[in-house]
Length: 402
Image 1 (tube, rainbow, N blue to C red):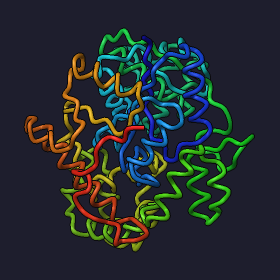
Image 2 (spheres, rainbow, N blue to C red; image 1 turned 135 degrees about the vertical axis):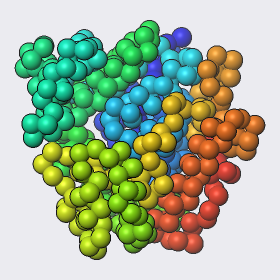
Image 3 (cartoon, helix red, strand yellow; image 1 turned 180 degrees about the vertical axis):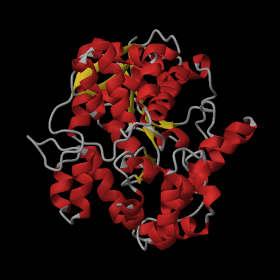
Image 4 (cartoon, one colour; image 1 turned 60 degrees about the vertical axis):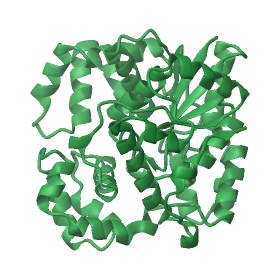
């Protein structure tokens, strides 16, 4: 049985995501199973998810996935490389994945694999190191190093976000010597961060921007039907949408309490970016002001947002786990339940279907779940209705069976 793994955020799940799920099943056969590994309440760009993990996971199963597993928090809110590595590690640990599927701008899996292999080569690493320190961003230096070895056409693949993420997935597979086959599907609709819809498709960024601008009905029309229902239910319950601005004072308070050395630990003392963030946090009166004061041409906003989020959640790169400690299913249909039965026999990590069962696992698993629970409690303080922000809910949140 072919089983495709997809690494997702679904923030929110839209028609482009539905197209990927549909196309994967078309290419691999109608009996293909699909396992998604999904970020929880916080996402890779250092942002809060619009709605909680549970309704997003259920919407994914209603939209074509069979099983949704959680991507543990430290990987979910990390750089593209670590995000990809954590997602691949989680999928491989299931023991059931035959294909790794993802969308890309180019749709050329062989080209993406070629760039991935180049990036892992000593020659590329040496070329990258020679260019760093010259004033260019890390991304620009990396692209230049690849272009020098493979030509500008291959280097240009690193200019597009989904190509870049696909290359990171391929790197993670190559590092592990995995036999799982990459399968890339060309993206439909506008670019990843395009502000406008195109042909009924819109990026997640565009939908979130519409919601922030008060254009609710337009945003809802661009979500997948199951996601729209989930969003409306969370909205009616006072649990959504969730934006960082709702927790702004709490985040600023945390930044003001931190010393310079605390910021250095966030960035592992590299290149002085932490100094800019420390100085900005002393005077800024909003998160936007912090980011604007700390940014430089060399560093993307996303890196600063992640550093701020890590500070709020009490994470540090120095305590980054070496690997996921368990597999936590969030939602499943009948096919997904059959996969879970296989995983209990074949997975290399314990399958955590009941949160309380984490107490039977080792220290690293318990520490990771405690971290997830604390983060979920902080996330809930961003709910529009604070009376819905009950602590400790993650310990009561089991798998949704659809």
